[in-house]
Length: 168
Image 1 (cartoon, one colour):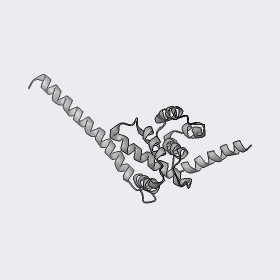
Image 2 (spheres, rainbow, N blue to C red):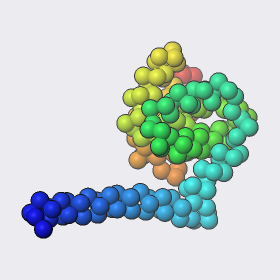
Image 3 (cartoon, one colour):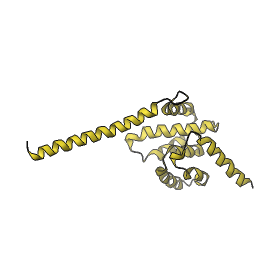
Image 4 (cartoon, one colour):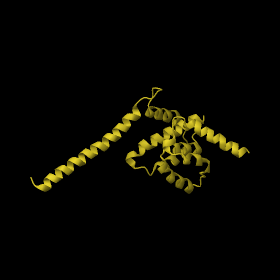
C-alpha cells in the first residue's frame, strides 16, 4: 500500500472513533436523564408528565410565541428542545396553580429551561415584540446551572422580596 493510503486509513479510523465517542456521549446523557430519582421518576418522566398535564392550557397565541422562540434551534434538535421547554413551562404553570398558559408563564418557563447563552436571543425577541423584560430580570441573572431542585422556593423568595420593595 502507498503511504497516502496508510495515512487515509489512520485518519478514517480516528474520524470514526471520534464520531462514535461523540454519539456515545449523547447517548450516555440521555441514559442519565432516564435514571429514576429519589421519587421514582426520571427527569424525562417529569417532563412528559408536565407536558401532558398542561396540554389543554395552551392558547394559540402562546403556541405561536413558543414556535418563534424555538425557531433558531436546528431542526434536528427542535422537537427535543421544544419538549423540554414546554415541560418546564408546564411545571411553572402548575406550581403557580394557573389554569391557562399566559405569556408571563411562558417567558418564565423558557428562561428556566434554557441555558444562559440563549437568553440574549430571548431578550432580543421580546424587545422586537415590545414585551418588557424587567419583571424577569432576576431570572436572567441566574444561570441554568444555578437552578437546583429548590428553584421554586428561591424564585418565590425573590418574588416576595420584590413585591415587598414595591409595597414600600
